[in-house]
Image (cartoon, rainbow, N blue to C red; front, side, top):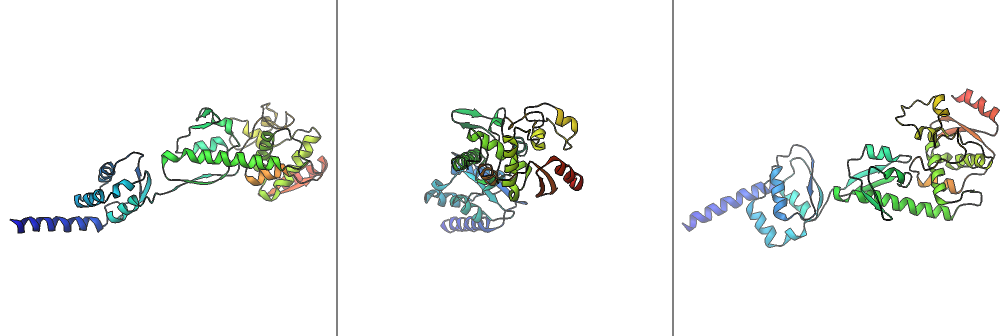
Length: 309
């Protein structure tokens, strides 16, 4: 009888070891989520639901050695045909998979939300923001690549982006040159958002100089990207009637800066807004993607338009 029991135990142990090291039936890489508060047994059950079986003797060993207490919530990448040993090793060692979220330079809140599969619910200075009012934070998300390990932590991406942008804005506002004729940091952010949409980093300071020159002369800024921001459902083709439509963001019909940022500007654009290049240009027209022709007079500008557009 004892020999029979030993044989059964030995066969079960061998089978368990076989399950432990053999490739799983997972056909494609997948993200396995452990939620905050999940017990080890819940994790085992959830693995079972994706056809990964943890042998009983492995559960005994893990629980007896208190390794189950080391499990951390987050997302774990399970690769196709990865064996159970590798999967459990990742979970016990908290080797969470970091998701990547990119906020591009010059992006808008709308473009961020359109491609976001994470919840947006923030509390900033006692005010709750969600998808209904988050547009009030336009410009305050620092463009960068952010990493997070769980959907539960995805909101931290937006909080980090805001804190970073606020810090940069304070830094460059405090170090602005005397040439900057603005009244408050928010105006610097608005101006930086225009620069970001109008030029590549190599011309940020030069375009900033044009905007300040126009502000000093009380000239309309005539920046198409601002006009476009104020058009709902813009189809990508700006027309003359758009330039005549009087919205708060129409810098042809209104003088001065638009009422709020039109994009999330990079550090380069914020720096340029605080330290513009000093020159006498009042106009610029695109020559190619990252190059403009700058003009001092309207006649010269008209000639440049004929040449480059």
